[in-house]
Length: 206
Image (tube, one colour):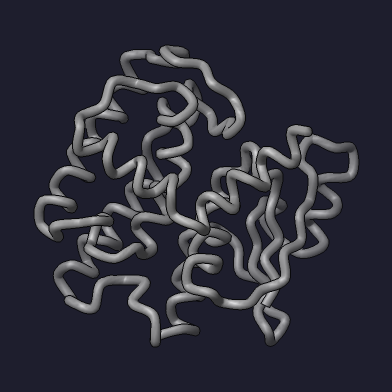
């Protein structure tokens, strides 16, 4: 399979399926399209009907776009990995918070965009962004308390991959967080697949 992504520095949607594939050791071909270039849109439209990245090209040649659809497709293709919790109730909860991440938190996205190699403590701390952060912290705290960690539902899975770009934002803007959130963010950042994405972003910045 092939995963078409945008710049690792700031393509938060691309990060989610990439980290998932890397973490579970699933082979894939990476195609990176530089964003903000004169031919960016045309290149993306060659593979993604939505004109956006990421886009997964399956082994059958089908295009799958939108991060949540991509990770669902990956999970279906690899049932040997517990990307979603095996327990039905926990799986429903994991899907709910992943969908909330996919559709929500607009103020955080707008005011604290993912810029992995940037450090700007305190920037973007609008009331709306801070309200989004409070909700995210509540989600994390509840999931970690129920699962016992180290990740949201025990072992790293789709829900964690969906929130990984939020961790990158927290690393950049350093909002005030609870000890629980800080510890979780550190674990996500230290994950080899996430560290590899960060390394790629640093290479782009050179």
